[in-house]
Image (cartoon, rainbow, N blue to C red; front, side, top):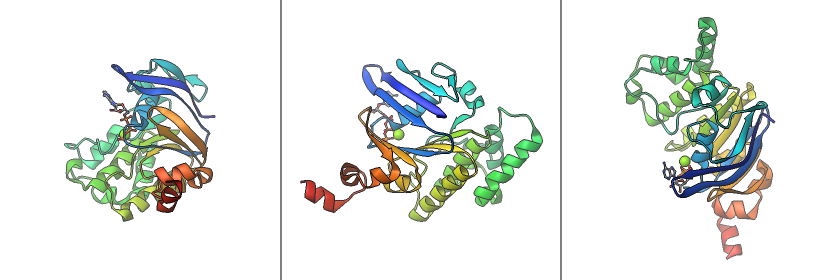
Length: 243
Ligand SMILES: Nc1ncnc2c1ncn2[C@@H]1O[C@H](COP(=O)(O)OP(=O)(O)OP(=O)(O)O)[C@@H](O)[C@H]1O
Ligand SMILES: [Mg+2]
């Protein structure tokens, strides 16, 4: 396993946001974490990236205990989160934002190769290279956020709702690109409210409810699971049958 999370507990003051999360991500997989608002999806990613400190539990990435490592060291090890939503640097250009993503690296030739790879995935970013990031459309900012994460050449990419706020056509485009990034060798942990799309590209999935994993399985198993169909796939027939 590339990532092994065991019995992770996170508190925000008195709020017990993660109540013993355990999950695994294997090399080369796309694993998705689905769940309703407030379930703890973003909290899980924040704990993995070292942005918040778990009170208990363990995170092992490529055989190294990273539970208490600072965020910048975790990035250097290759576990990289694309900025949540569209938290790019609005007052910097597309070019400068991408450069920021490569801050842990020094080989200019390799950085250039990564930039070309980002442009192959997101040709639109190349067209807007010198534009201020804050003036990009929402979808373009989302692409820049993912592009910036790719500039650090992650072994494993953490994505927090990459489809949020995008038009259906762009949602399809973003998910196709995530799949392509994965096929080129990057392992992906994908947090999504769009369970339908997430389960269509993932290999395996976990369902999170109020800080606990309540279901897990292959993406196909979960797509066919009555509880998932009713609660996350908007399957009206199942809801009527159940109720
Ligand atoms: N900084 C914070 N301080 C206090 N409580 C927080 C903080 N951040 C998150 N929480 C709480 O922790 C719980 C989990 O939040 P989290 O953001 O992880 O949910 P989520 O699954 O990502 O939801 P969404 O789908 O709405 O993004 C929620 O009840 C939330 O109110
Ligand atoms: Mg969230």
